[in-house]
Image 1 (spheres, protein in one colour):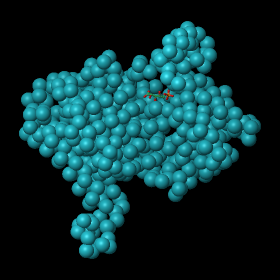
Image 2 (cartoon, helix red, strand yellow; image 1 turned 90 degrees about the horizontal axis):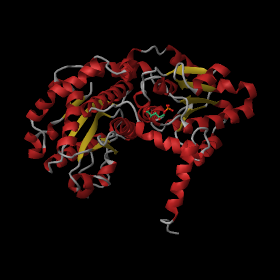
Image 3 (cartoon, helix red, strand yellow; image 1 turned 180 degrees about the horizontal axis):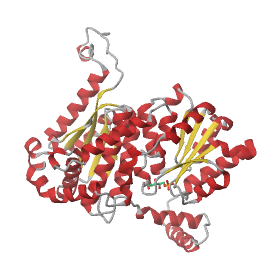
Image 4 (cartoon, protein in one colour; image 1 turned 30 degrees about the horizontal axis):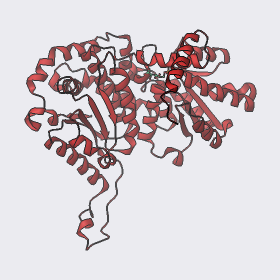
Length: 447
Ligand code: PA5
């Protein structure tokens, strides 16, 4: 089971820049109320909490089919429809495409270079395309889907439909309509499950099964941590403590930037997944906390100086792994060189863990608050735990701020301007606004 160490945010350890037990006690009624909203499923969007109980049979069947008839699995999606699947692949199957088939490609942008490059290395006849969009109307996903649809049509004619799977809302949206018209294989994202909370739905589980991961293990981990995080006593509940600490440090001490630093290359994409969850859920009404993705030890040689001596606006969240599932001994090859031979006889996992601990301590000694989430190993069970854990923490912090952690109204205006520029009916006014803005910008351009 994951655990949380929060010594390095407490005043007893880091001095008066830390939190007092009193401050956490004072927040008790509000964090208890936040937890109650979760326990009582006060919001429809808390449906992600029930994903561990879903039936995975259809997902498993489709994965078997894909593994039997495809050399490549191409996922089209963006935001919550892509970051979770990518985090799963990178955590659980390092260097996947060099070692295994089907190779996995996740196209989550509209950069033409990337799609051209992907299409140049895959044989579409041996490719399954999984289009993931909850709404069925996201421009980026729609664009790449239409390109793939036409490419498959050229190659396979009517049979093209057999090469697609649609993962979308059970009833609504353009993609569901296409499923009906062309009898595509499809998976459902339950109506209450919002994109960035959807990794444990078919959005992430199909990819997991395709790379050979038992999705039930992910769900088991998620279920176990959910039970742990429904505990009502604040001091015994790691999600309530983490949410309270980050909220208090953000609102009372101006530490509004949360650095997320797993000490494992395989969790770099998890760090990006967390950042989307945190940013899109919490940044509203002038409130919120800013996520900052990172990876240890690499960023010790890039970012740590700023965290140690820069503005006092950050909290560092370490993600520590106990067992890397692999290790290598550092040999004694330069016996007479003291500057190097102190490493000999130790292992790489000893070194990475020592560096993690040393960084925690040096930040604490400089009175820079930090916390550590420990996981025993990077395996499906514990990955499921950290997905669910951070989703619950995010919802709790959102409720503490008094905002809706499940919507993203701030991204709509940009979408509307794009629709205007791309000629979507009903958005003519938006196009005019863009054109006027372009005029104004001209005199400020340096050439
Ligand atoms: O969290 C969210 O809801 C968003 O980030 C969505 O995942 C993203 O915008 C993609 O949406 P959709 O799955 O509808 O294409």
